[in-house]
Length: 191
Image (cartoon, rainbow, N blue to C red; front, top):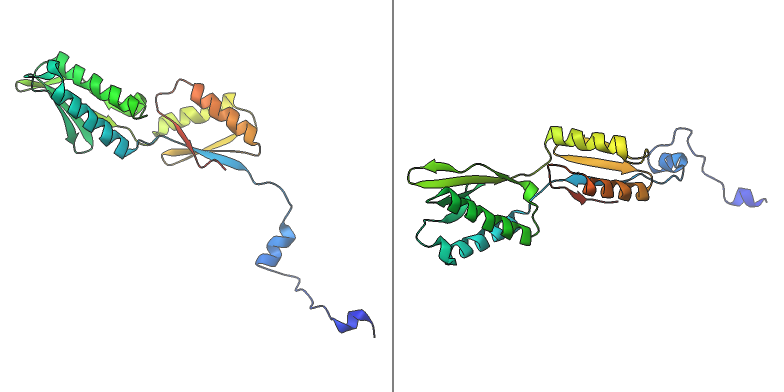
């Protein structure tokens, strides 16, 4: 008896599906590496910065008897004082606390001081997500100046950047960090 007769092979169907088909089609190539470009503000860090600014405004001598305050008003930050200069000083305190907490001022959208009764107010909001026109601008920058193997695509309020080469992706990150853009960018999901 031949050894082939002892262990007969099970014939493989011509149209295999599932894991068998994936094994047949596997070419051994490396998958694209990618990362996401996002613009997000950590709400807890922003809240901590606001609380620190509130404490400083309450304690500082130059803010005594001017009605200075800073607080959340829904999703916006509301700053109040009895003069335009004092309310701008409250804004400067808040900006310094944001910087210390690692939040870029590019993510802060500040309005102009306006009179409301006897006091002046400034409303500021924190920007989350990359707007469509800013995403198109970033995508064009990547197309024009990044290595040619790098591709980008807009996915809602973030941007996915992919390439076969991780070195090209790191060069693209450096390009975006050095670019003068109107949004604060973070790079996540590098794989």
